[in-house]
Image (cartoon, rainbow over all chains, first blue to last red):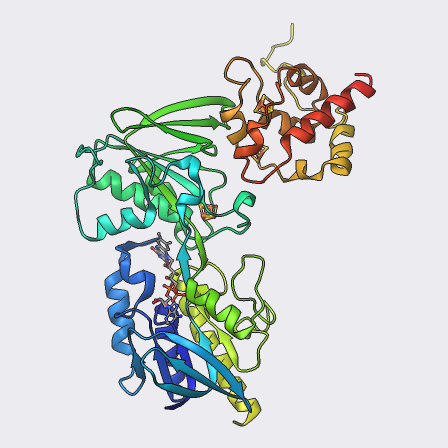
Length: 342
Length: 112
Ligand SMILES: Cc1cc2nc3c(=O)[nH]c(=O)nc-3n(C[C@H](O)[C@H](O)[C@H](O)COP(=O)(O)OP(=O)(O)OC[C@H]3O[C@@H](n4cnc5c(N)ncnc54)[C@H](O)[C@@H]3O)c2cc1C
Ligand code: SF4
Ligand code: SF4
Ligand code: SF4
């Protein structure tokens, strides 16, 4: 099989880039390891900042995906090699693709919250991740503690696995502050008698309508924000959690018993991203994601000729940023073909 | 008699950058620059062995270093038992215990 571009990863970055590359006139093959396209966004429910339906976004992107693109689902990359500026890629279905360029759109994995042992994920009963809460919301399941009770207090812990030198992740994951605000609102909507608290170090409400969502969470839903880093959580015999936090704005220690703790897990490079970094000898940036050749002018180029990157494989990104980055990657590849007259 | 509008000059609560002495901050920048990474998140204070029973509040001390509030630091730092728990929880991996040692030796060698 031959193609101009092989897109690895069928999340929103891969889908959007493949569509645009096809529209620019290139033959495109899209490889996805899972049985469905959509990546992480396919697992989300209502999106920040405007409660747009994640499922509909994926549906729209898939409808725009031209039928002429070769899509290989449930397919893994086994090996890649290069000869005379052509890449030869062996796949798990025993086929080989020969391609002139590769676009890496293998995205991120969620930070493994067990590495922050002091927060008790997988140790205590009622500590869950933001992704798990999102999945409960998506399936419209009741929010209950392990003991089967409706929670009357839920805490959200920001920056779990991000901005943390202890685990060598210095970067901010960019989506978790506003996700906490959004999920706290959803908890207040679903469980009007449940209090919601966000424990943060800095609130990063940089995007369009983020600040408005934050205001709404306070004014309309009474979400309480406490500036302090959770130092430890312990469990009571009835499965509740006791939090120890310094309320830094008041300068006084705080103790709080809560029914459920939600850890706002950050992003780390996905296994697929790491595999390709090793396999292709790609440079990495400070966050251990794929490094751009030049962060301003050649953001979608890697250090390797003919290999490009799009979406959250190069750094944490929101959906808007991912889609814009994917279109920009398509243009970068277009320029590459025009300049090299391949 | 002129009418009083109730404006009072209260210097006692002001953090006075014109009078405060930031020498400790510059000293730490030299010998223990991780002090400058502190974002005052308070995790250290919440876990502090001594803070549960005393007024010791490391995140306030860390802020006071930059503010040049030397008198406050000298008063509070003596309550630290140097257990190092603060360092375990610090997300910025600030060498808190090392900083406390340096503060103590700095204060000893400089007269207040
Ligand atoms: C809890 C949470 C909530 C979020 N909510 C929002 C929100 O409300 N609004 C918003 O704007 N953003 C949100 N985001 C961010 C959003 O998830 C990302 O912007 C988006 O997923 C990035 O898309 P991507 O295609 O770059 O990566 P991914 O979604 O990670 O997709 C990567 C794809 O590549 C595939 N892949 C990986 N390795 C290989 C391989 N070796 N071979 C083949 N395929 C491979 C994966 O299976 C996956 O399908 C949220 C993030 C989190 C963590
Ligand atoms: S977006 Fe907020 S919660 Fe996420 S890493 Fe950045 S500061 Fe922390
Ligand atoms: S835990 Fe570290 S970053 Fe947080 S206030 Fe203490 S010293 Fe500063
Ligand atoms: S070393 Fe001092 S400041 Fe740190 S936790 Fe122990 S007593 Fe508190």
